[in-house]
Image 1 (cartoon, rainbow, N blue to C red):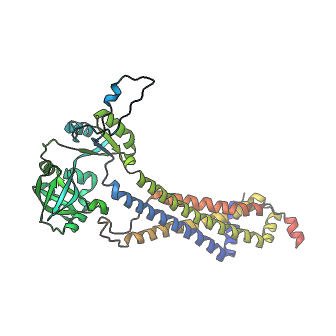
Image 2 (image 1 turned 120 degrees about the horizontal axis):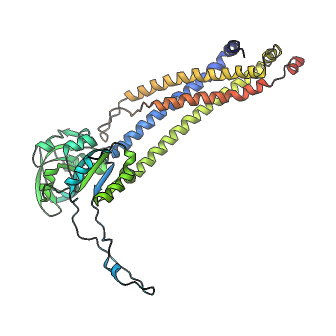
Image 3 (image 1 turned 30 degrees about the vertical axis):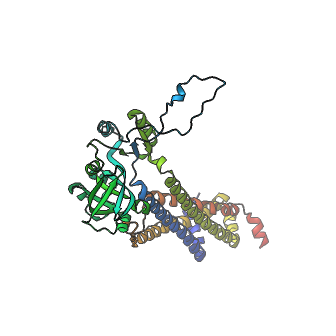
Length: 419
């Protein structure tokens, strides 16, 4: 096959109808540009929305749940085929919610090569006292260093120094919604009442804002030592162990393993936040569907242009075949035309897609509800560019395949006789 000659003929046909060729290439460029930009933006949006929860959520949480005793007294009774036993209003068994042997569990977890880190936590309900009113809230007692390293705690402290929680005795970082509701400033004192009725004054050293209003209107943070003192508990009192894994995909099986091994309750991040993963998957699916649709539409444009070119170049095709070009040669010529449009248009689309994504990435996006977000979220994932390149070539190939097959079957005798 005369590859150089075929390439020269394809080039001549492209330049002979350069306006239509340009329109087809622009269509591919536009499709690839929007495909990359849409996926980059939607992926960034998914990461931002999931991050609001998942950045603050452990991969595995170990805790002790309040639940009825699995072995009820009625189970000890003699069972007969003719009798039935019914239990009403079963009450949970009376026990403490703390994790026993939490220190030994933490040591075992820190030695596990699959675990990135462990952060202890105490969660307790309290009342914020405002004059004669009591507002329900939650205080999380945290290890400040571990919480910042594993769950980006310092990124969500929008006022004050997060280390003051560790360095200042009897201090508290209020949720932004709580601070706004109570009209408290940094350095003010707030009185809280525990579920045991103890009233304790705490100094406000910062505001915390997660971006989730319901959380920010209830939750606040103290150090573990302050929370233990608040509850009148010893320094080994822990209610939760938050585990970050090196591979989040291992969370479901590891949660079951740890639950059986340590004799505590465990929940993994996939189970706790299944709705967020579902939302991300649906948004990504929609993005891919829209992008691929754009590429297919561009492919139809190339198909129509090549069809018109074949009808207009019937004489040229007949002469080519009459002078010794085979049907496969003609097929190769029109496939070359289609792939040239796809490659040139696709390359332009990749560049424009990267440029448009960069522009969007620089647009300010400031909102008080999302303190960690400064610009519109964009993800520069090489996978998107690889997928776009493959689809541009595949789409344009099939757009040129059918017209080129039609051209390869043209009988030059019929065309020349008709003339």
